[in-house]
Every structure is written in structure tokens, then in C-alpha cells.
Length: 114
Image (cartoon, rainbow, N blue to C red):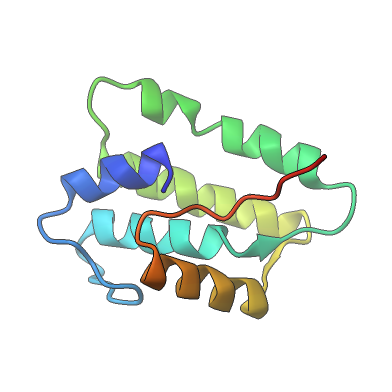
């Protein structure tokens, strides 16, 4: 679970279920965008650009209190930017992430490089 996810979930009135979106609730929508972003893949050579885009979210985390509406707007822009770089959701990765999160709530999938 990322710091941004944690902060958004703390802001949520109730814990949202995956895919359970209420258009009037920026917390729930932001969490849904984060779920989608976890499953994006990019063409080779684009990861450095994606890291720069993700670093653009750092000011949200440094704020004294997370503004869910600002977070939602920033995450939606990040998703648009990733799509512009050729990114797309990977259904197999999404299924793996969903399985891991269901079995081990709060777990993170990471790649270990040696």
C-alpha cells in the first residue's frame, strides 16, 4: 500500500470496495485511479519518464493535510500522461494484483533486481 493510498483511505468515510465508485466521492474515485495505475505497463524506455511524472505527486504528500479533490485531479492527470506515453492497463497484472490484495490486504507487489 502506498502512502497516498493510506492517506486517501484515512480520508474515506468508509472503506471502499474495488470497483465501487461513487462519482460524488473524490476519495473513492482517487483510490480507483490508484488501483488502475498499479496495473499500467509502458513500452520499453519510457519508465524514466513515468518516474518523473510520479514525482509530480510528491507535493501532495508534503501537504499538512491531503486534499482528496486535488489528489484525484493529480492522479487523473498522471493517468492521462501515462496513456500519452503509450501506457495501458495490463489485464494479467490487474488479476495478479487483485489476487494478492485479496489474500494479503495491504501487500505490495515489487520486483527484486539482483
